[in-house]
Image (cartoon, rainbow, N blue to C red; front, side, top):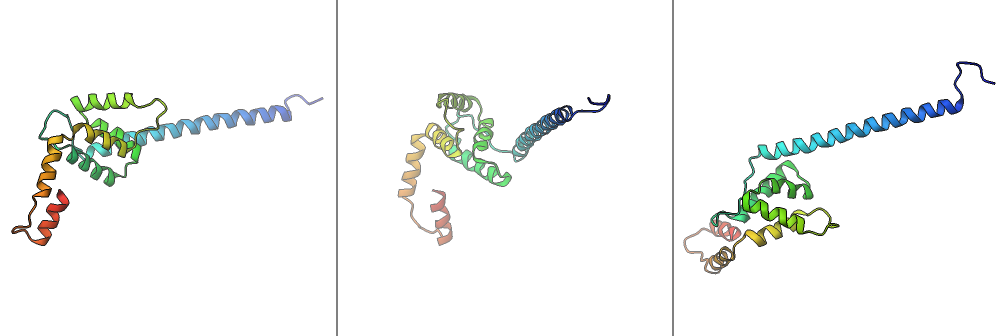
Length: 160
């Protein structure tokens, strides 16, 4: 028989188990709050870089420039591949956003999160007009050195 007020081994073990569960839950809550804060701060950091937006309305807006500018921002703030797609989507407006929502919904349910390469290919496939592609090819094919310096010629060639 155990004296009154003393704790049995079983009661002590149960108290430790309950305390351990409380601590585990608290750590999990703190980790979740940190992840949420990190995600929020990542969005603010992205927006502070003043990334371009893209509507899909204008035929004069170059979708390649949009993608390249976003890549520069992502490199500076060290954004992970799949997070790039979500941040880019935030900068899509009007027609472009409607396209993105449909593209995302059209992906298989069991598909992994879209990679940046997958998004870029689909985006340029949709918004990079055939006429602009043909114009760039023609410009490249008719490129002549003329009075350009070697450095200027190299820059022009790289641009195309």
